[in-house]
Length: 85
Image (tube, rainbow, N blue to C red; front, top):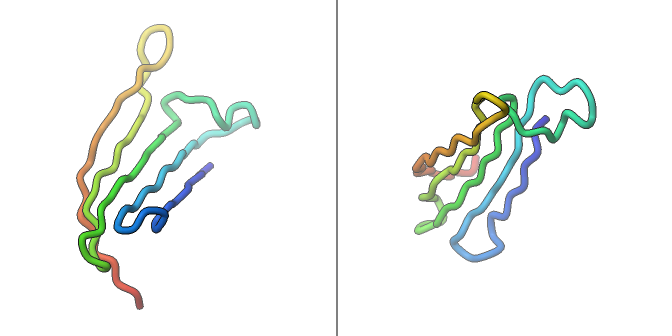
């Protein structure tokens, strides 16, 4: 399962997107359970030029611990160059 939303031009020069990925789904109820088969993420970026976006990804993953799962968070900086073909 892959769900994603993007808000590229809601605020001028700001980009935002968020998503949810899940694998190994057996039932509908299993589709939105947060465990080690889930990934939540968000991207926030600034566009200093029309062809460039500078920002960061924020990831939430889940690792097994005794009695359940624990959230593991990670920040990843990004510089993107956007060209139309």
